[in-house]
Length: 589
Image (tube, rainbow, N blue to C red; front, side):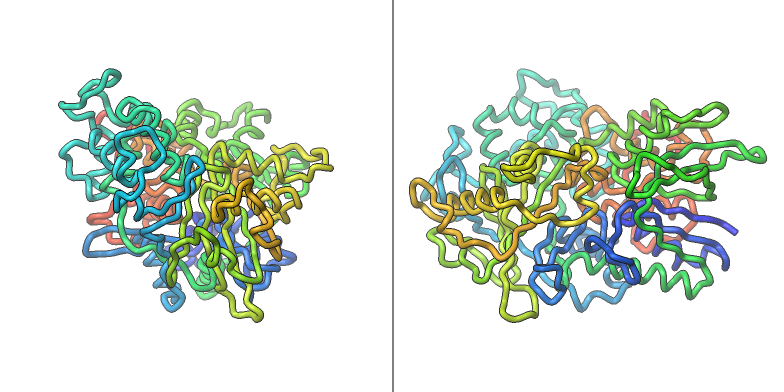
């Protein structure tokens, strides 16, 4: 009998379990064990602490599914369009196959967002109509900041047609700056993937141009010194287009259904399916048994994640469906074990180099619930419509605000607000307010696993700061008066920068062949030994779609198709699941 061990019950782990169980490739009596450090509210879970799963968390007021909700993790996907080959094919297909199409609703962004930048309030249309200029000392301040980003991207992509994923993958691997690039710093033959986006943007637009796009774009993670080839696509004219969608019950509903489907398919096909929660992968290595390298691992209870590990266990196939920080925590524990006669593959220099090919981008989300939608009558209200939730964009610690409103069925209605959606250095502003002004820290941040436990109640100081900043954005009173925003019914936060996630999303670092990393990091044992010992790394971090569920699904699908012989549910003729390396890059998987 074959044993499949899946560590991590987030998007990648659940998808892997479901596809294996439904594949008809497994034999009756085979086992699939889904092992999760947290305790998600899957069907049959005992005393779960939060909704499913991973970096998806639909948070309902008072934890009541009938009440309104705010998404405190990933919150939407891009519907697949087969005519243009744009969007998220696997997420769209999975929702269809799971029978969830009836729950699909729009999740659109406004074309006329409210901005609060450098103490100025204005709307996007004000800039488009030339009635105001953005408060930045740049010649681009009379146009939307996206125009500037598209221009910067064009200076890197030149005349190339990069609308398809295949063309984009080739650009990531070998694209060079155009012959007519005008730069004091860079040359026409420089590989774009070896350039930092922040560096090139500053070189071309100066500090004020850079600050304009960095502030008005809403995501600080989009303008850091990440891989300029990837950034040129993501922030430019070839960014994936399509309609944003979600599920009417919240995005967590997809992952609750994925778990149910995996367990049901396993039962119907005679496969032993087990969910083991509150259990962490402690360490992993290879040992030779009968002339074959066999994965060995130890687990530890969530209550003592760094101590009391189990006796060594084995499996035929191991899927590490975890973000890089979680993998590194396993590698840290493994490197201090006695590895005599064993293979510590995660600490192999090549594997470590590729694990560090992505930049961890912390993010922070705060949900507030009110008894009325006060923002609709504010001096500066957001321009919303049916299934249009925002955002409002600021340069203060709120960064972005989304207005979820009343999306529950309970009465009286409750109105949800994603009061702060921020990333990178802005997360530290709120992190320091997780404890009240009267508390000393008793648990080190490195051992604060709040994202696993679920949304935490905000201290009074954090709540008042949120009200103060929201008042500053939506009203004009000076000095700002936080009382213009009513006291909320509830305020909760999730800090995705904490362990074991370490980030809300990830970005490719420069100086890496993205295609080579995508291909090879999937099989770390091959990188370390030249032999595929059945251990795979899966997750959005090492994908074409970083920050999206689609990325986790695509890496999982690529492993299942390439190494376990499953037939893909995707049409990959114009949609490669992951990139291929350049001709000069080594293929080690």
